[in-house]
Image (cartoon, rainbow, N blue to C red; front, side, top):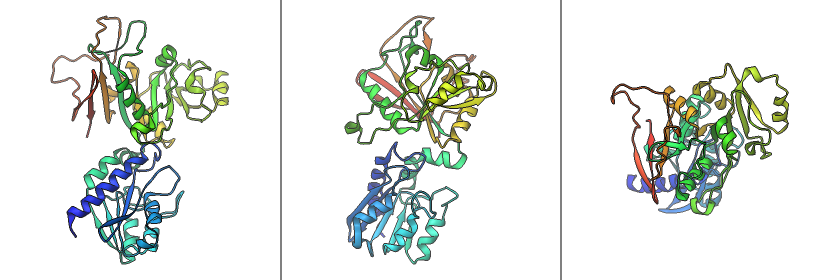
Length: 369
């Protein structure tokens, strides 16, 4: 087959997959395109966790015309009965002649089994078309499905001299409106947002998503709201606790397990994660969040958590927004601290940097591959 044609239709499937951003976690982003006689007759993407998969939407749109057609799928069709029936069997039943797949699903429940079902039915399978691009779409899913540790993305807004707040803890607003719009996109993209107790005490943030759905082309979804609170100081009237969606999580010391205050949190639907001691390892926090099917975390601060994440080298990627402002006060709050390096060879270096412009703000986007 003409690889140029295959790449064209697979690129469209990848484009469709992005439309499920934020709504399908911890499932993968998947797009599908059904093609017959060189024309697209059906398209679909995985829209919502627990809902029909991309292949089903595409085949339903194609209808009877799917018989003898080719289907392009960004990820191996599932082979097991989960919240939805197996897509591999649906492809067979539709009478598809050829199945083009970008990459294998590493989920042990699938991992080649979907391809086997399709091939055993006599359908030709071509694997690896735009594989790199398809894996890039699902880097969050791929990390989580392989080790159950959430993908950690750092976001912070800083002044030109590296501060996140004044000495009085004031930070509204360091970055401009365009940068803050991007943050709302990130809050929708990732499953959870994490901050420390100082952020809650100083700002009383809602930790929700206020995404402009029309501008970004995806549906808004509120993340899990995770607050690292070793001494259980979160006021019971904190905004992040009052959404009636059971998405508030407090990470606290096991020493607080029997406090009367615990019942007040639980009555609001808050989940408490207990860890030993009062100084927590980021790796332990992420491990516990992974047990809750949280596949990705947006770390927004404060400086203590950010510093811990850098020290433990657990940050997968991030975006640091920089405003053309200078506080110039040694008592103001830096976005990272607690490190002593004697040479430039020892310092942290962000990998694979990319630079973005948001009006009069810029950002450094990075990824540890």
